[in-house]
Length: 167
Image (cartoon, rainbow, N blue to C red; front, top):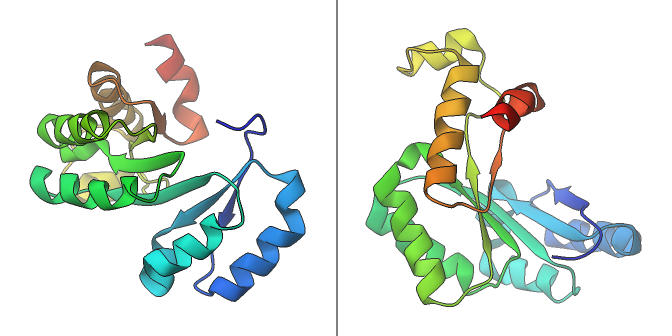
């Protein structure tokens, strides 16, 4: 990973705007995070244009599907050689293991980062989708699952960091 840990989130659906912004801040950042909005509008061609700027990529698509589909989607992401990419830990052990196995067998150096609970959820919202525990408890459960399966890191709200460090 680059020495500068700051990745700029490029939250646009326009490649030209993204390139213009990145060129302005390129010397101040360590990499670029491209998410679902960028990908669905600009596709792989757009990602390759950003990649040509020479900064490490964090492709943040938060993969979450049945194991075989997620594994196949991850293969496509790994071909782009990002520094980091994301998976929803809620996809379960089989999905996580399939993704780790495909990353390892392809000899990719991409780090797999597990998403715990989306920060848009509040306590009522998490119960609404069927979780019978608090957000904090769910994040802890998922962080443990990520650790057991040897993911390279997790994404969580800053509110849970202290509890996760104690685990």
